[in-house]
Image 1 (tube, rainbow, N blue to C red):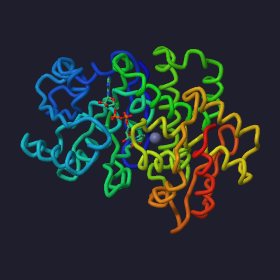
Image 2: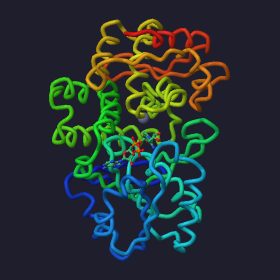
Image 3: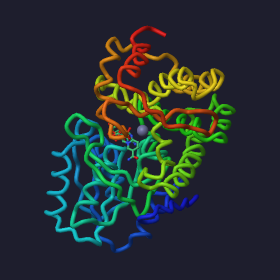
Image 4: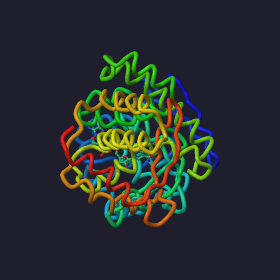
Length: 350
Ligand SMILES: NC(=O)c1ccc[n+]([C@@H]2O[C@H](COP(=O)([O-])OP(=O)(O)OC[C@H]3O[C@@H](n4cnc5c(N)ncnc54)[C@H](O)[C@@H]3O)[C@@H](O)[C@H]2O)c1
Ligand SMILES: [Zn+2]
């Protein structure tokens, strides 16, 4: 089992990565009062496993799905935490995908100004991305992740065994973030290209997940709060991805990230940020996760969601993280009208 250290400025965390990681909880937190937060789907699948891993824990279950990453779920979790009379030394375990991790993480940060937090990610996306780095949030007022904070987990237990029950659609979701990391890190990109045929095999996903976590750990150590700049690279594909996700829903977060990366590769090329050759490389990476880009008949209208993005530096403009070469990126701000014209490319079949 590999242990990856995340040296975030506010608090270091440790990621246990590999088969049997979840079992480590018992020895790491022997005697600690434990409160597990999970969603209804995960609970249905893992009720017995949760009882075995966290024998005396209270378990709080909220309805599964992004649309429940909201204030009602957050306050129902906080209510249950008060009912269980947790204290600051109690351990909140976020057992589930990115929705559970983001919301339980926020509840842990808010309760009594902060309890201990352990992330047990059960989706590929949560394992390679959301459980590491300390971003917590709920969606609010139609804006994704609008209310949240940075709150590092003490420990992340990243166990590939959970991926065996994951539906295909959720696998693609995690692949989206893996392929994004491949564009951001030349060595990871090369490994993905060389193993394209194994991209959906659990053994390969386990290996590449550790690479993605090590990459994210480096970025978070450098720029925990997305202030110095380094962490902004993780937003590749996300400005467009989030805007489409808010407007259209249905598909997974990772699928929208891939669509965002695809469109933004054209923007990078046209804005002179990257060469046509590199833009084609980005689109090749995207195609490993998504064969065909869907049509969005009114894509231009999504500009209003992109304008709500908290990453925008100025009013009336849209900030994008664009890939400028293998392992290189640049932040670019476009007037809303110019960005809307680029979105129009999604209105026709590719
Ligand atoms: N905090 C961050 O840095 C960060 C980074 C990326 C994404 N996110 C957030 O993560 C969320 C997306 O995460 P997600 O894709 O994991 O979504 P999710 O948590 O909704 O999980 C997806 C679906 O899979 C189910 N599921 C979870 N584990 C399972 C398992 N082992 N077997 C079968 N089904 C399982 C869930 O019940 C759900 O229906 C978004 O809200 C996004 O904003 C946060
Ligand atoms: Zn993402």
